Length: 376
Image 1: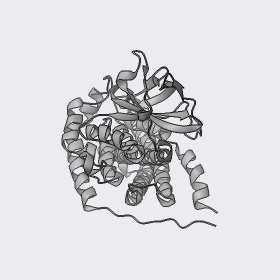
Image 2: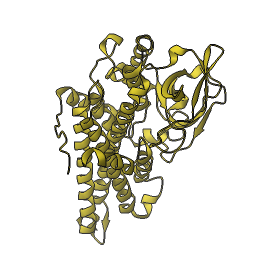
Image 3: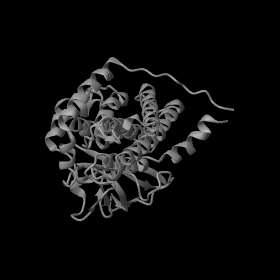
Image 4: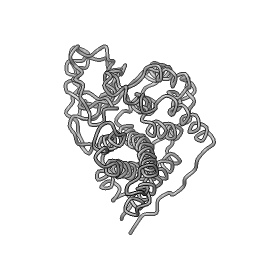
């Protein structure tokens, strides 16, 4: 027997305003030349662009008003992140937004007072969750132990997003038999603690971070971090899905532009049915992903995420990852031999698709968890 889920979807006036503003901003700041100029840079983003995003107030969209934010909720970030994905604009925005939600949902009053106003002003935080490559792992090997009236961390985290530019980390560790999130400032790390990794998507940045030997005070532990952890994983999945949906739309634009300009045997190649049909399938899959991310944006709130919201976030991630994978693959294939070179933008999209698959769980992971939610 199947379960009937909440199917509501809405697009607010605030979301429409953010979408219009974000589309213009991202189009202006992140054309193809700008994207490619950052591929080999150390940070992977333009600091001036980040400062402009901070000035626009985007870093405060989800942060409560008493800390200088706008309290608009995660749903308000979806059109912004979608636009960033469409123009391949890379900044630490997703990492910082998830970290802010960790403190909003799991932090103490003193932690919120210290970090949230700073994050509105552009301070960057990131989650350090993985000890291995399995997003379905139910335990962590990173440990927090008591030492000389302090707490000491032991363990390494893998592929921490934006680690090089983060001002602080929220580290998942095991303490007295329970999982906790611990705030570690970047200044507390050893000189060689961050080991940068080259990713398949070279517009992104991540690093392995060794937290062994870092000592903290007890007030660095989020009091409700364990309770917030499941929600943070769903929020991460939704934001990655939003970015992937935008990138799928960009891949589709690239394909349509090529099909309507490239001629073969005296005809535009877009006139051939063998290319028309997959292009329509790209559109259908991308539109489905957009429906899912805005459905999830409609349901998600500031409190504990309910079952309907979990279903929506998992469906969004599964669909968006599949849509981008198909769009990226077809973009490469349709461009022929040129599509397999890095000079062609199609290569950017297929690499983004491969990266997206593994972030906050791949489609198989989410569908496995969806089954018991939807089927009795």
